[in-house]
Image (cartoon, rainbow, N blue to C red; front, side, top):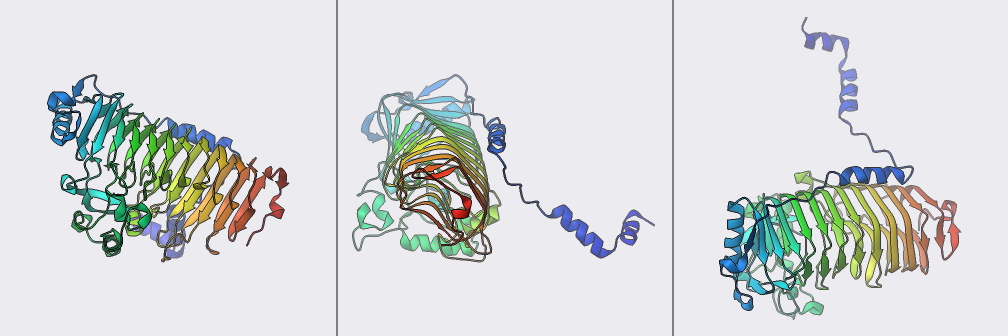
Amino acid sequence: MNLKQAFTVKFPLVVLAILFLALTTKEEPKAWTSSSQPLKEMQRIRKLIKAPVFKDKDYDITDFGAKADGVTKNTRALKKAIEACNANGGGRVIVPSGEFLTGPIYLKSNVNLHLKDGATIVFSRDTKDYPLVLTRWEGMDCMNYSPQIYALNEKNIAITGKGIINGNADKIHWWPWKGRAQYGWKKGAPNQLIARDSLHVMMRDKVDPQKRIFGDGHYLRPYMIQPYNCKNLLISGVTLIDSPMWFVSPVMCENITIEKVKIDSEGPNTDGIDPDACKNVLIKDCYLNTGDDCIAIKSGRDEDGRDNKKPAENHIIEGCEMKNGHGGIVIGSEIAGGAKNIYAVNCKMDSKNLDRVLRVKTSSSRGGTIENIFLKDITVGSYGESAIHFNMFYEDPGKFIPTIRNIWVENLNVENGGEYAVFVDAYKESPVTNLKIVNCNFKGVKQPFKINHVKNMDMKNVKMDGQVVNFSETPKTK
């Protein structure tokens, strides 16, 4: 009798099935019981994130023909400098003081694009300067205008220095494509709506992203910075203004450091930092004043997010300051691949035009699991709607009910609250689970809670205008 026969004789099929399920079923992670646990996990993750190091050699773009007159297009000069740097083992491509107009920039491996103090890169408004590349637009993969700074399958790339990167968008250029009058659109003018709907259909039909062709005539705005499937990224020190759409959105990248970056724009969908299906991400000491979410963690929309099977994983946000925006620290809405191990500490937020502090937005067209979310030592002056906000009905429903579980919020101090302290709108069959709120102080909130479906919600030393609120006083449905 061989091993297979012996195994079959000894173990009936029912027993084998039980063993198979036991071996293949993923165990639900245990909820944290103290903040020391996520803090320890955060330090472990921090050690995994290492900024790339570059060869000590400089390539000044003016040596390759670039002119700082704000009129000459320097696309070719930048390309030559980057290619020379890459071909010789890497180093810094220097942008000196002055204003340099250019089309999109493609970053190659081992290249650090370094902007000196007083340097400004201004991007062209001419769509003919933007080639079609594989990109991700609102969580959907397609061939569209190149992001203003782009890389595909590269490693060890950086954007550093004290200069300014100007996306050159305004209410006449790029922003009107949103299709809203407040951003310069006029009745009868073209906009993105038809193309956006078409891209949704292609995604649902699982059309090859290389065959989802957009660009001229479709009005899907390019992003400012989007490395795609890259490793070892650094963005440090630069100021970013007036992006056509999202500012910084690495897609399916690993080992990312974004530090001391200032982002300022109040155009449509001008999210600040949106890592999409990325792993091991550090966002540190950044300033964000945006027309949409300040920091939004994503993992693809619907079919594209689920099929790639890449969650947002191991993100640390610390020492950041948020002003205007739809949300300060946001997970979603393009989060179909799920998110886990998201940590935010020592951040400041303050604006009545900042709608929410922590926002998780998803829907049953997304699905996925969002788990292990930790916030500690968050200081808030003002906000508009909710401090802690969970919404499972952000967009039209589908067949993939999401899971939100294991959230810990500690030392969240609000001086001038908005409509709610805590907002939960979840499915009855998938309540927000293991929500812990510890040592938090809310002042000026109009209505402390608007909650329907939660499970294992626990509050310890939570104050509303100086009065301690016990869990027994917290409505489970409203």
